[in-house]
Each structure stands twice: as structure tokens, then as C-alpha cells.
Image 1: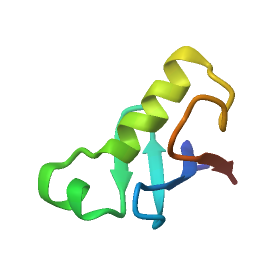
Image 2: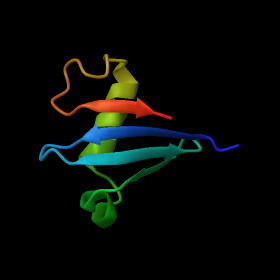
Image 3: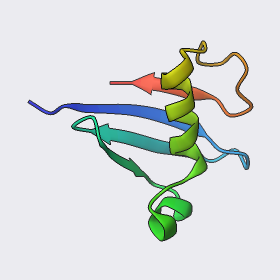
Image 4: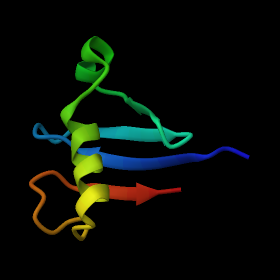
Length: 68
């Protein structure tokens, strides 16, 4: 059984990126920023959402959607 959580994050240019969290510690995003730096603003957005429990589309300039 996979312990993976997934979100779709709409970036500042309107592109949608898949952000994944595997085994509670391994982050991944499809964007170039993650590819080059192993971190990105899309992952930071999801982490912020998870840390303060803000409603998904309230207070976020970038939309985040949970999907299974």
C-alpha cells in the first residue's frame, strides 16, 4: 500500500503542477524549479496549507486541490 498524498497546484503562470508527498517526508513536483533546486514554491504552498490548516482556496493566490 502506497503512503502517498497528492495535490494539484496552479502556478503563477496558470500551469498546473502535481505535487506529491511520499512516506511523509519525500516531496516531488513536476516543475523546472524542483528539477533544478530540489524544492519549489508549489511545494512551499502545500506545506503552508498543511501547517496552518487554511481552507484550500482562501487566502492563497495559487490554488491548491487535493486529489486521490
